[in-house]
Length: 172
Image (cartoon, rainbow, N blue to C red):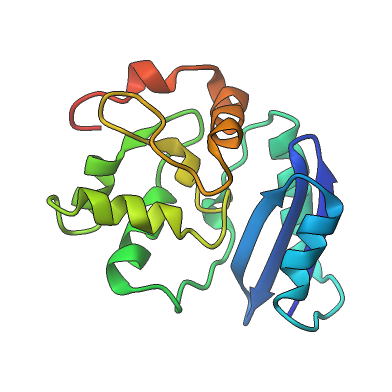
């Protein structure tokens, strides 16, 4: 399994791929925490072109450049069907835009499953490749985030200040 560990302005980014698709990724506050996450996936192959491309994109993203992670290959085969649909729908949210959990539930095929959409984001295995930080509550509040609300706020601010409050309206 190819793996990646790189220091960015946002913290230590780590990722693990299987069969050409990313299965796990996240930001960690320090190198030891990131390395521990990597160790939990066992042995890793040397970094390859897939890892190099993601490292370059993550460095650009952390520097504040718009990056479209929707082109990064992912493997969500271990996710329940609704979560997988919600996670794939979240990948369509453009940089500097937000959507609501209600929007996400609708896109995942069940408009009444707003809480389940939230759970799908809470169990996102490959953030920010799946930009779950771009999903907020209908009232514009942040909702939750697996990496903690300060990191969610930092990612949204990196992408465009506090614009999520203005952009998270009915139907979005």
